[in-house]
Image (cartoon, rainbow, N blue to C red; front, side, top):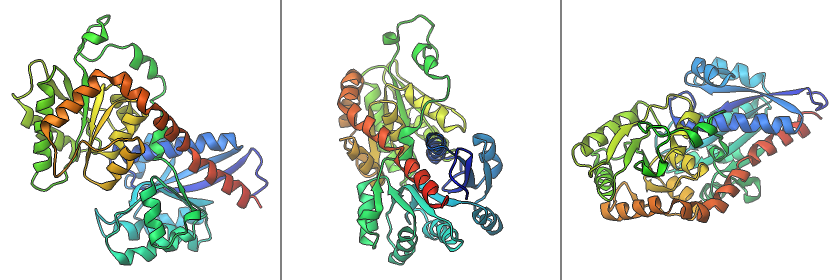
Length: 392
């Protein structure tokens, strides 16, 4: 590949759950692209990404990168063959809770790259749950043949260890979205603009607090959403507030949010309101929405990660171990689960966050700052390995 001088270019294929209108996964991609760009510049190389996407035209428009069809064998073969390596990640790619096809697909892409002699890199993967034991050799095989393996929590590393990936091969790093910045030029607007519906010049303290709500459908009978609605009603009766629903995966989260808002109709406390945000497709615009909140109830993992990155106090509602694992890294526990949520306990905890936002931030800032710093490590390692292996 040349001598590794400042004009060195590496074409890297990026595999993940991209092009599906999921803000969290799109934030993962945006974060990886930004980190690779920054670290490449720091190390004197340029990265040319090629993204495998369910909607290549949209992905190319959104990020300004080359993109191809993720399920098209010809496209996969062509871009992998002409590439310098493959990044798989991040997100919860290697799990079989959503489908038995997920692990074979993502490990299959990695295996194809390896068969073509390309280095593969696992980028802050969330591993598990893996309920079908026949999946273990698929994961073990591609991970042990990868040039670099990083996972986003200790539980993922432990799972890889149980299926035969040596611990010394695994880096435990934060989710890449911890390093995602606000949209360019937006910081002044966040600091200086009055909230929607509030006259300019009005004291911010006079406005009702803004509470973000990120829910997803999980239980088939909707009992978890019914409990969440009861908890929000209880919270709204403690003091006037604006509940802003944040659909991270459209259109499904939009439908879910509208259903819960209908449950709230006519039941909120005096002076409290509910509204639905429409941040569009850009994950950084959703990040901006979260940054404007005074507190957040999050069921989506990346809603909680967005909140942490913007120092927004949060209450997590757990539907999957990955929620508990992330909260644990901040020294937090979920306020409830999809099976149990006490409305009054939730309301009490929510009011505590709203009344002592500064205290919450001071307590959790060291852990959050560390996660932000560590989120760049996979990009640093991958570019270092590319420079010192492909340039030989």
